[in-house]
Length: 212
Image (cartoon, rainbow, N blue to C red; front, side, top):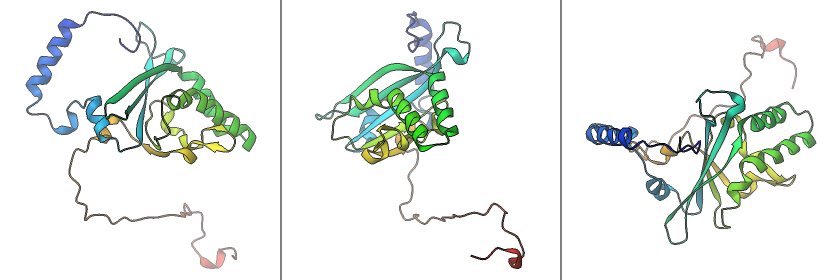
């Protein structure tokens, strides 16, 4: 209701919800406990900001109609004095973002691709960037809806000014990812890296392979 801007008296249900949370707090694992904005902010490294996107239906009926869908955008970072700064930005039209994203993936020329990257930057990133100072060099992005499919690093203000050139980008499933739920043994740092798969397209008989 808050996202839709609809005033509603929820004191009764909210009180019941709070009492239930308190009764379960002793038995809930850390992964399911509430994490506050202040705690998230403490987890952000110096020079970092969180940009959280949340898809929601902007209608009173609650029906999931695409034409009614919007992205709520939240920006969180630490001020110079260490206090958290949280701001909700104006909602973004869901279908407008989807059309630009589909056009980007279907574009056949670099010029057309740059055009849609600039459109998506203007819709999704530019309002958040206007709040960030020059000290911010890392963006933690929590995308929702269609946005996990979007390569944010390719978004640009100009053809030679890509987001990945200005920021280190870290993708999160949700802001809760900033709160570790378990201790990881630092000794276990080995990794298996695989690349250049042929997807079973290479002939099994080496004699059938083309030279080179």
